[in-house]
Length: 318
Image 1 (cartoon, rainbow, N blue to C red):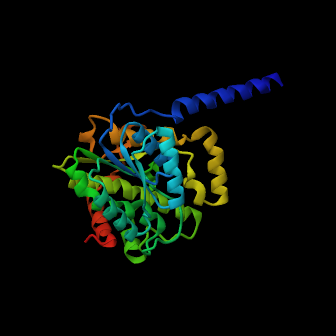
Image 2: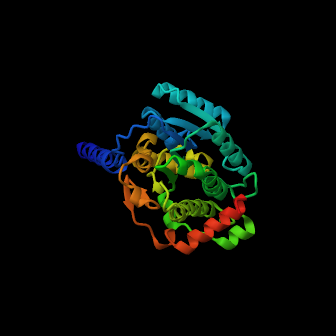
Image 3: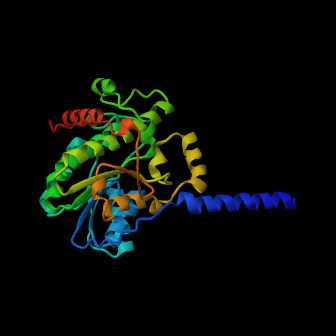
């Protein structure tokens, strides 16, 4: 019995050290003061988006919580204001699954706000179905909505430079692909018939984030706007809420030892948004507050350009 107890204690100690040293990861070291700056954070009613918004508000930024649900967005607004003591936090409704909503949001923002210094494209989902415009849900929300939003706000970002765009991706992009034939035929990254297919499409959408950032950096050369994509780490957030029951159970169990909480998961986003001296790394991919190399397909110039041009047509920019 004593031997069994010792083994249990030893395993618990190892798990604790692993979580404390490896899982929590590095923290953003920037001391940047954001008084007079304005930031937009999409999907900021929960998870790492909300944690990011809180930190930006604490640093003095005017923060726009851009969220789909009015009820949840306004509840998050109250929380962020209460936690930070800031009155410079606002909620603006944005449904990334509706190109009309994205355009309305951008129009309202540009009319009512004079600055935009940081755009954090954080919102993402794992969910099958179709957007209002008939696109696959994960392609439409995780990539296309943010693509349109970024382009509609780009002139304001240029006017207020130096400014930054941060695209929250995932290490899942490493196994992603972009099937252009399927996109042209079905307006989606794949034809999901199983959980495995849906997971693949999520990975594909995260690859789109990295390729978008790669191409965007090229188009921003000569301006004072820089952009970055990132993997926030394995996070215990609400992303799993649309997954099946078995996947939800597995993720909940794994989160105990292997997932970061929202505040820990926001650190690489904050690093990309705030860290001084990384401007020359525009277009690059970060993980654990460190720039990382990516596979060839995630930085392929031809694929990134083709995705950009297709996204322009699909979003009505071209």
